[in-house]
Amino acid sequence: MKNQIQLGLLILTIACFVLLGYNVYLRETTPPEQAYTEFIAAMQQGEITSVHLRGSQVTGEYVSGKKFSSYAPDITSLLPQLLENNIHISAEPEAEKGLVTFFKVLLPMSMLYGAWLVFNRKSMGNSSSFNLGQHSRFTPVKSDRVTFRDVAGISEAKAELLEIVEFLKQPEKYSQLGAKLPKGVLLQGAPGTGKTLLAKAIAGEAAVSFFSLGGSDFVEMFVGVGASRVRDLFAEAKRSAPCIIFIDEIDAIGGKRSGNSASGGNDEREQTLNALLVEMDGFSSDKAVIVVAATNRPDILDPALLRPGRFDRQITIALPDVKGRAKILEVHAQQIAIDKSIDLGAIARSIPGFSGAEIANLVNEAALMAGRNNKKKVELIDFEEAKDKIIMGLERKSIVVSEKNRRVTAYHEAGHAIVGMMLDETDPLHKITIIPRGRAMGITQHLPIVDQHAYSREYLVNRIKTLLGGRVAETLVFNRLTTGASNDITMATEIATRLVCEWGMSASIGPISYRQENESFLNQSSNSKPYSEVTAEKIDSEITSVISECYDESEKILRKHNKFLHKFAEALLINETMDAEEVDIVYRSYIRERKVELQLSGKKS
Image: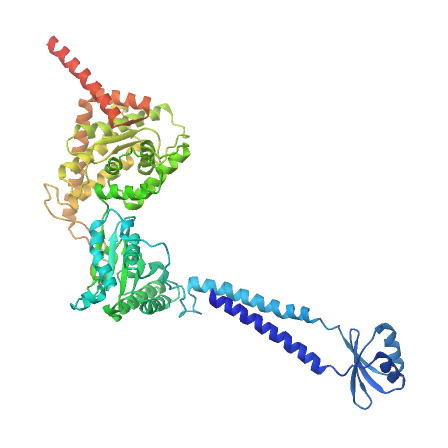
């Protein structure tokens, strides 16, 4: 902006000099002025040979060759006299005034300046081939200072990065021992786990400059632009040392190189990656320049980028556990008016698998729910509604569902719930609804009590049985098949496939992984399968066997508890949405009725 203002002032100064020079030129080229009466007398005496008319301004030449200028008050009466005296006449339009001339000069120059501004902004955004070496946007980010106090739920990652912060604060402490600062830190993890926030916290804790860019900022259609940007970025970072360079979504430029430069875009990306590798090798650790990168696809990064000396540390940012979720909730709850009676720990336990970004969205949605209902504080019911909206989708209350389809949906969801309830190693039922949400006509939600990081074969098989419970219930009650079970079948097939091919949990095939990788060493694609056709037939047969056995087991459970299925479905048709406590009430009622039936049947026998 400063350069643009200076250029505008320069253009204005040039315009003023042009106008001044034009006025000087007019003054120097205009002959001495003569009174109009003297001009008329000289004309009548035949002393004038020629005149030049410019509006009312008259310039001419005497017989002696001397030039003069005068002002004619009435040109129309002067012309006949000039013709009578055989004087040569030439003419041109009246000269414009200085202000008009000034604007005539300034307007085209201003238009040129405006066009230059538009082109310059586009070229700064797109890096056209006319300004490959100019990257003035590589300046440290100035924002609200973020520290580790603003980051919650990832204590292990913070502890790992504290050493880098200490080095940036006290480099002599480590240099005396001969220790070298890591050149690069790769933050890898699922989306929304706080990788960008953590990078800002490093810069905030160390109080150093922070350059923040995205991987896509380096990739353009012009070959060589990305490499030039990388060089300019590192040059600016060295001048601003100590500092941190943060490259978000580095997989945009750091993907594995294929060695095939058939396309210009691929060639440009590889040149950019090569420049990044050279620059990371080119600066020494005493420059106190650290490259922090973030990605959720570490599997596609080039091995040369991950070797020691470039990204020395690779820190995995995992999804927060129950304690981490509670701390993240506390951080975001401070920004809203929340009811003090709310137990944030209970909310944290009910949202397993939520990332930091999803928790922030949950708190915001709860505040919006409270505002929609004209509440002064956010209550627990607002969190529950916000959680259901995020997990299950928005309620589609306006959709018209026939009574027949409602009954099918009720039995379908009841089948899921009952099979899950009657099995041991399953997640407990949290909520069930037959109100359409998102793209589903009904949802049965199971939530684990504790965070699980490893799953047993019994759990996975029971998960398949629970998924197939909806299709089994439809078949038993209505003797018909619907498309409502399509997503359940897809998920069940995926679990069965991974159980056999990836996790080695098949008794007939054994602990062998038949997972087919799409890419091999150096990203060379391989079209051949890592197993024979005979093995493929065994795998298909085993997957089919697992699903068939689970289907049969689900059918046995629902046949045994057929009355509970009808009772549960009828309760769903009345209430539409039921939580775990309401389902437990219906189940207890069914158990009491069954005991009475058993007692009566015992007396008869």
